[in-house]
Image (cartoon, rainbow, N blue to C red; front, side, top):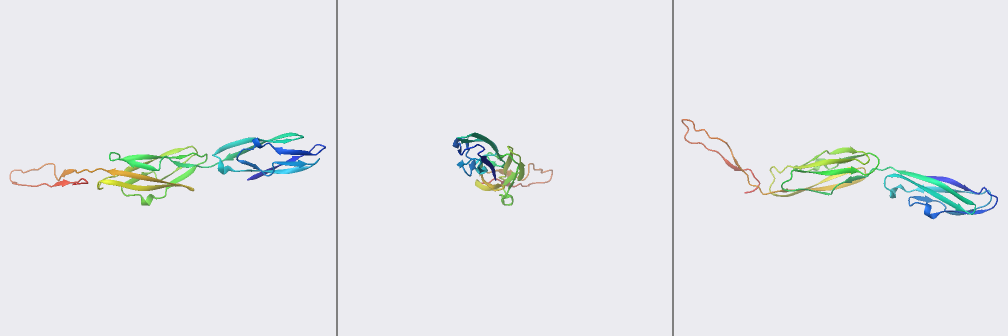
Length: 212
């Protein structure tokens, strides 16, 4: 995580040196930013970086050392490699007319990631999710489809939570589905045949909907 360089006085008199403050980016730290050097003297300056505060990508800066014996410039570069897992929404709604909707998963980082639905075994019986796992390259996106099955459900509102996981990133997505009041008539036969001898017959009239 650290690296060092040596600041030397190769002249024939003592000197004072310092790091130009404006040349230090927020992700770079130095162990010493100023000092005094006797003739022939030297000092070790350690550089350390903090990748946690920066987004994925390359960074570079020229650090300037100033002194009364001239200046020196040092080019410092750093690469932040990280996967950044994101979901497009924390809430999905299936209105009474909708049978499916989708969620976008994305990787805003610059290395590949794997993701999965951690709660797959606990998903409500009326809800299906596909796919349940996958891979995302840096900058990639993938759509996950949610389908609702209202068959056999009473009128009302239904809700379930689906959890997406990638490494230490966990996102909970709430899925809400509305089931409208819908009485539905059904008859047990579409035709009746009396023939030459049959005097009566019957059929059954059913309500196969979700309300009276």
